[in-house]
Image 1 (cartoon, helix red, strand yellow):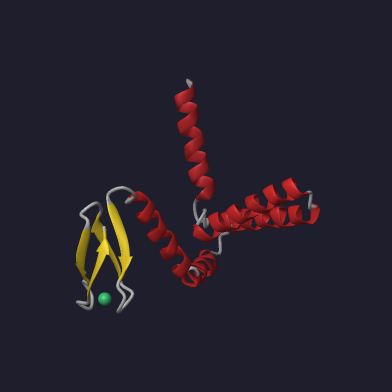
Image 2: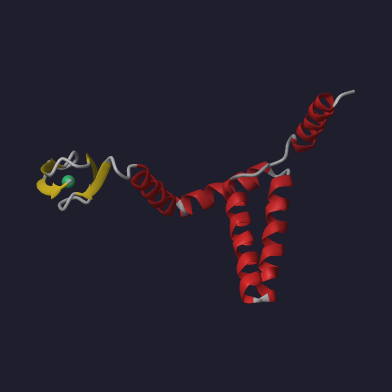
Length: 140
Ligand SMILES: [Zn+2]
């Protein structure tokens, strides 16, 4: 038996083990991220009690990943996504702005606050809001 067969056998075993379990969802990834962040802070500032939050977070993430109560875990995840959707969309927008660096600029409509994306380097341009039709000029 070569290592590739071993690997695929391990994968099948893993899939069988994870069958009917929740797996890692967004809430679990978020909890793990916070936990690792806490561990880093605990290490840098020598705060041992913060390390407890790290262990609690890892334990909870593991519990959720291996849990067979799929409905409960899904509801928790949905609740989490609902609570954080504004923050998530803010992060998405920031990532888009960074990705557009050098090619596009982003403005907010002064009337309705709609975000507008225009090509960069066209000088002073008149922008028409796609939502409310408000016109305003900005340097692109
Ligand atoms: Zn507008």
